[in-house]
Image (cartoon, rainbow, N blue to C red):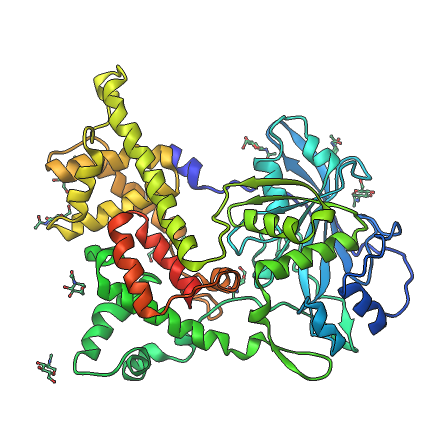
Length: 530
Ligand SMILES: *[C@@H]1O[C@H](CO)[C@@H](O)[C@H](O)[C@H]1NC(C)=O
Ligand SMILES: *[C@@H]1O[C@H](CO)[C@@H](O)[C@H](O)[C@H]1NC(C)=O
Ligand SMILES: *[C@@H]1O[C@H](CO)[C@@H](O)[C@H](O)[C@H]1NC(C)=O
Ligand SMILES: *[C@@H]1O[C@H](CO)[C@@H](O)[C@H](O)[C@H]1NC(C)=O
Ligand SMILES: *[C@@H]1O[C@H](CO)[C@@H](O)[C@H](O)[C@H]1NC(C)=O
Ligand SMILES: *[C@@H]1O[C@H](CO)[C@@H](O)[C@H](O)[C@H]1NC(C)=O
Ligand SMILES: *[C@@H]1O[C@H](CO)[C@@H](O)[C@H](O)[C@H]1NC(C)=O
Ligand SMILES: *[C@@H]1O[C@H](CO)[C@@H](O)[C@H](O)[C@H]1NC(C)=O
Ligand SMILES: *[C@@H]1O[C@H](CO)[C@@H](O)[C@H](O)[C@H]1NC(C)=O
């Protein structure tokens, strides 16, 4: 239990004391009122040399305004280090397509950004942008990575010689940052920029809650009418499929619903309807200075982010940018480097996601990825037999752990099967060192029917874990299926979205090929497809 508590408590060290706040940081620079001429030239990417006038500490105030500086300490792998963290707003055009600019100015939006000043100023190696993936992770990434990963030499070389940057990508909930919030550094100040004499607003937070907002759960007939043709079984379907999916926010594990085609179909239908309404929501519609309306959801892919990052680079007067990306962040890094090779210095890609911009290829590799981790745990289990280990160190599910797993998952007791699938998924996703061995204990116990040490306790741990991280927000403005921003970004990036029948064809083969990975991959393929 102690191990579990240590693993699940996200230890964010105390970073800011009262009186540490120092804001605003005024650049003291004077500048002309922005003319549309300037914006157009800048947006067309005219290769003016990066102005030597601007720097990380003194950015171009037409693009970036630091409004809060916080001196705090960073708990590195070896000691506490004093750092200065800058917080501010970056102003970007909604549409970066230079062809548009021959005709009209697009709307502008603000993105919340953060910079951790290099210990040695000016930074010898320039800026390093950190993206922690998701999509959906935000501006906390630079600091989080500094604590966890960037200090591998214990000498602070990364934070000494790079200014670390991070951004709330389009659609990220800017209020969800754990540092800039009440009782810490304080709430986020408003975006100070104007365009065509109007205040520029932050890019709207991406969330989808239209089925709830429109009270469709209280009007099941109306809801079912939109999901499928009505017949005399519709209300049964509402009760058997729609409600359980709605409550779980996904296909539930219960009774092996993850291998049940009807659940797959209804999940697709429900998410599709939610996203269809969401796409039409008024909060995503922005007006250009000439009054034309744009749907901001069409301009929030990874290419849009890469252009935003390049404006961030220009704003701090840097010729080149280095980038570190984890998971989906590896897409961000590689897209930036592909579009702006001349402005790219160093790249780190940590946990590479399939770069193919195709829905089926990406979902297929999600399924394979999960399956491969499980395959690795199974292989370790089986080889424990031949490693001269003490009897109590040999994996209880060996030999034939994979076969036993599938016998249970496809067996007659669906409650047992569902419990095991959930446990196996957790052992793949989180805390492998803890849950991997426990999953093997349960594979054996469920398969053989004889008690194996560790298995019963596992489910108490799982319940405990569930109370930490699976509660869904009841707030009105919450993303019901929790894939809103992922759908927007990856859906924009990927071609080949599947309709319901194509999805089912994909699902049938994937559940047989990757029975452990299929549930996770189903979420992603539906996100991208809808
Ligand atoms: C820094 O982190 C270490 C290891 O997680 C922890 O033991 C220590 O208490 C932390 N120090 C502060 C000041 O937060
Ligand atoms: C924060 O740190 C900077 C740079 O080290 C220093 O100039 C400034 O005075 C500090 N501010 C506060 C409030 O400590
Ligand atoms: C960090 O700042 C504190 C006061 O804010 C100071 O006492 C301490 O000496 C500083 N540490 C370093 C390594 O500069
Ligand atoms: C954004 O985050 C805040 C703070 O956690 C939360 O109250 C709010 O509901 C979130 N909004 C959305 C749309 O998720
Ligand atoms: C639904 O209607 C069909 C024919 O239209 C009938 O065969 C079937 O028994 C009905 N099912 C139920 C549950 O009433
Ligand atoms: C799928 O789930 C439904 C609802 O729980 C159930 O009635 C049906 O028998 C299941 N189908 C299969 C093939 O297990
Ligand atoms: C199925 O497994 C569950 C959980 O282990 C158990 O409580 C239940 O009695 C089993 N059902 C049957 C019919 O064996
Ligand atoms: C472990 O669980 C099984 C099945 O639920 C039960 O029969 C057994 O009594 C439990 N053992 C302990 C020690 O709780
Ligand atoms: C999550 O919900 C369960 C059941 O309603 C509750 O017992 C648990 O305390 C909740 N956890 C959190 C972190 O709110």
